[in-house]
Amino acid sequence: MERTGFYTLFRREIARFMKIINQTLIAPLISSLLFIIVFGFFIGSQVPRVSGFSYLEFIIPGLVMMGIITNANSATSFSVLQAKIFKHIEEILTSPLSYFEMALALTLAGAVRGIIVGVLILIIALLFTPVSVYNIFVFLYFMVFCSVLFSAIGIVLGLWAEKFDQVATFGNFIIQPLVFFGGVFYSLSLLPETLRAISYFNPLLYMINGFRYGMLGVTDVSIVFSSIFLFVLTVLFFSWSVMLFKRGYKIRT
Amino acid sequence: MPPAISIKGLNKSYGNFQALKDLNLEIEEGEFFGFLGPNGAGKTTTINILTGLTKYNSGTVKVLGYDVTKNYREARRLIGLVPQEFNFDFFFNIREILVYYAGYFGVSKEEAEKRADRLLKEFDLYAHRNKIFREISGGMKRRLLIARGIIHQPKILILDEPTAGVDVELRRGMWAYLKNLNKKGITIFLTTHYIEEAERLAKRIGIINHGQIIALDKKEKLIEELHKINLDVTLAKPVSRLPAGLKKYRAVLIEDNKIRFVCDKIPDKNKILRNVKKTGLKITSIETSKSSLEDIFIELTGIGNGKNRVLHTF
Image (cartoon, rainbow over all chains, first blue to last red; front, side):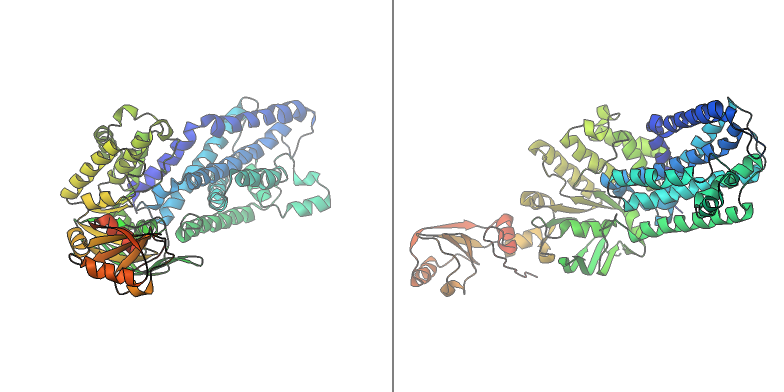
């Protein structure tokens, strides 16, 4: 294990998103703040309690997950694509880092951005409503693994993409709708039968509900299944990212 | 001691295009090797295979005994690369670029910072250390490429056209610097299409064309062996190809109306001229000259006459 090299790449990726903090940390906080104020505060006060919680309390775990997922994903996808387009990915490729270390350092740094955004959203939420943690292990598990999963997906996406447009499209056309239909703003029990059945095919439903269970102790799906499902997906996508580095997919001619 | 670089039977294709054809090359430790060839000959492909940026179809490539595929980490640790294109991250200033790069090779942050500052001063970049690479001049970027290539103190430095587009003064400075590095024991693999550069710096030279090495020897020997006397015969009328009657000579059509006879010793001018006349061509003037490395290069690679004469001198 090239410890210094690995840690250097990890540190560099974090330094990278810290240099554009307005875009990488502040912007997601502002959008979360708007959701909290408009949906949670203004509209939420008119909405009946969901699963025994005020509407604002109910959507906070979902908003945190939304922040984690979108930010962990764009951290790595944009970084990898930029490194590819401007060719400085060659700096890593000519270094003695193993392909596993390259993928791991990038994945973990992207996950850190997801986690920072998640924690900051929680802090902002505290200004409006008490925030509780029902089960700290479940809470941490879903926070960390979701960050790692979407960070790894971001690497795959960044390696595959050739234009920034493609990365943005994936975020807007795939991740965003899945997050919104994944139960951030509602409980499945509010949906008619058909829509509920369709919702079970949305992988993000399990992540959002798992995290909500960690915070509030309520969930629409099995927590055991959600945990295993998340773990398997994480291992799968991370292995895929390592394999792509190894194969030199779109990075070595 | 294993050789610094050992390439055996290397083949590389990009789709239907075969970039390298059964390439064999061995470079000893401490050598200053000049790798010459026209654009598209396979120089960068060879370099990229050595450094891990390009995959290859078959053959073995070793760096100080380490296979670049099987022991890629050990091999890469020993190599410093100065690429042809600027491949810097514009998110970081030039000092940070150096420090991070050294870090990838296991150099601690403290030590990397010390080395970065020393190199920045050495390359006259220290005053610009807080700028991103887009804010510095082309010559500075070239120097930054070299600084980055050596910050982890590699045993082998591979340079891909390091002086492309660099002014004379800076080029001379770089030459002196590279010579000095070589004196300190660093093996240097220099790719260039400036023949003068190879002639001045390299002790051994390889010439590559169409993915094959067409000449490989010590510089002096290469020049000496091929140090022929050229007899340039200017014709009254242009011809489309060399007349058949002259095929027995080493003759090249260097211009439409100029044939160059490459002779081993003082040429028997009269005999050659008689033979030219026999083919029915009219001569307007003749001229003799000694060949330089440039002539050898032109002759071997066929640049200038549109033909490709491959000569094996080894």
